[in-house]
Image (cartoon, rainbow, N blue to C red; front, side, top):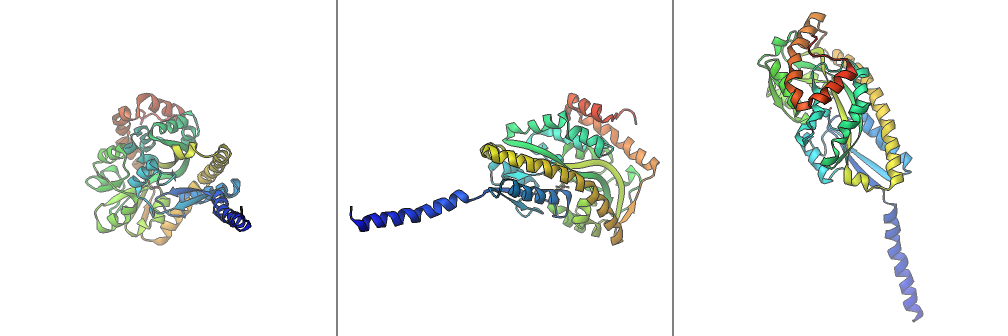
Length: 337
Ligand code: LMR
């Protein structure tokens, strides 16, 4: 072989090795899409997870967070996850019905959890694990539950008693339990993507909605809702989910590091959830645009009584055994109201 040919071969080999080596250094990208603002419990927890994932994997994983429905809206994000167009999401537990995992709607049952302590008995216990396992046949792995908070009703007319919601068009998430909840109050439920709620309230397409305060505040819904009554009649939280094929295809050590990052992010999420909702309530009050009312014990009981039948009506949808297991953890009894 001529020296020049050999040299050419060596140089060409070295050159082609450069992109290969560079390729080997390319981080594994996790696209994490969600629909809320950055300054919400979920928004902050997603950023926290991204940071810890980069640190623990020493840059082998790059989590790209897309907040505020910038990549996908509610329904599309589920489809995108299953197709592998995004790898990670944290949809609200009220949005798993269309996927065929209707048991998650148990979290939407009115007054089922009185506080975060009762809720955590379920999300951090055996029932929570059973629920996450139900996602696997759908090509999804459930990694964790993240808290947001307790929902309250808002509208453009005052809401003191259940009858005040009669005939009102109320935006809901895509949950049959929430649909039944609104019907039990005589309201007209309207399923709508989160990204469309502000405009729908502004233009009168719907009259009111229900939210944890953090969502109401960060989406500026206080600008278009005159009244907020702190009914705290239901819970809104999330399941962090990942595309199963992607997750199982990760190198074992990387997956372990990501599991650690997720555990830390979950502690963080659940810590900021209550703090954010409390802080955002004060911020809503300060705007002076929404009148905030705390129901009296009598008014609260009237809502509880009006909504208790939802438990009975939805029992077959959720599954009797599952529901009993939850009641056992929390002590809730819909027949004793
Ligand atoms: C909603 O649609 O109201 C919520 O699920 C939004 C969210 O992700 O908190």
